[in-house]
Length: 428
Image (tube, rainbow, N blue to C red; front, side, top):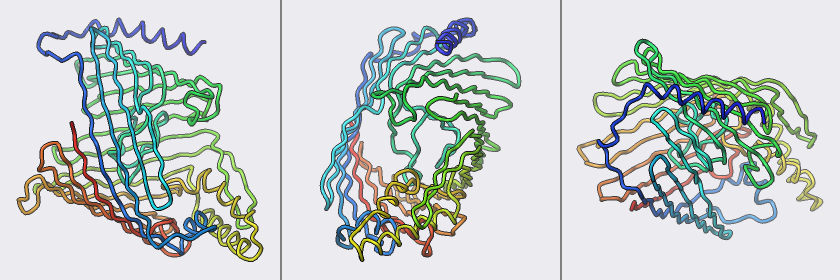
């Protein structure tokens, strides 16, 4: 109740901040209803890594062929209705996935929320929203109230959480040009945000944004509740028209990490963790864009902990082959689901991406190359991509992926060794 009263007080205070704004709405004429979206068809083939721990763990009861073919058909719908100071926005996703092992479907609203904007300095939002906290391109250590990005496809739309939030903005003259405060309440119950953390909590979070000396700065915070308390800071600054630098730093209190040994014994450690990211974006005179980021995951597994997990899988497989008992493999599966199978679950990573706009004067054509490297075990994935947008409302993409690493390394133990993917996306 105290947190709810605090949020209401912040909203009321925002009305005083907004008095400095002036805005002539007659300069813009917007349609009350907007609708759009896209339909996407994406077939792919994965070459399986039969020597990998995750292949052995996932397919120990039956070995599929050397490849798996999969087809994803996705419909994304976006709608917005505006009436006076009120706006309702919704983003729906309908996906059907079919592969050699079966088919699944996903139907959900990624976002569905109402927004009230009594004046340009105050906005109140309620519903399911996908926030974007942090300045990192591939990772966001300070993204406390959002789902994790997929570093291999960072532009992919993500599902939001149900919450109540506000944006209170004020502009100034001088070195400090803008201050924005975003408090929010995020409930977790059996049917609401149940994958955020422990149920029966009303979580309070906030972000304070500053535009100071042409530098974007955010201070973020999440209270103790469904997750342990955490706070962080990020920044972004253009050093020139061609060079931008950015970074994030987060401190997470009372992190509980469960690691498993080669015999199946689980160890739990509780302590504080610090994660951070430092990156840059550079545009050359020939329209080549370089993005580089270093990421330190303070809550990640060490190389030794990861290798203990891989040895557990090997021990469990031998046990199953000789006795038909899969007790150790079930422990490995539980450990996999609790953290080891998570993308970039270890501690130190490098992200490097280069994209070239219209090489050889081929209009609407953009090739790119992305490297994600685990700096602890020196394993890596390499993703070349070809994108063509020369047909109205149609994107065509061809992408491949190679994973490589020694035995006992992250990318060397993945389920797949290679992947080839085609994508056609039509916007309407």
